[in-house]
Length: 68
Image (cartoon, rainbow, N blue to C red; front, top):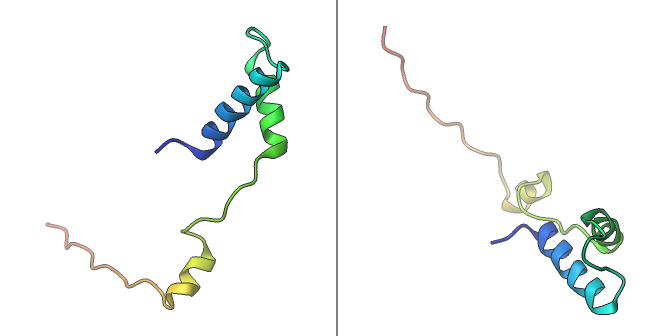
């Protein structure tokens, strides 16, 4: 699965090319600045909110005993 930000940048470049606002050699910076205005970050798993939904804290794992 590709990175969501890079997918958005690619689709922005494609739409800019079709509109005629981007031409080859303009540079990637122009596309990134345009993509930054329209990108909305989605909430994902892994945050503190997701831990509350599951309903508990994580169990401790046992550590290996080291050899002397």
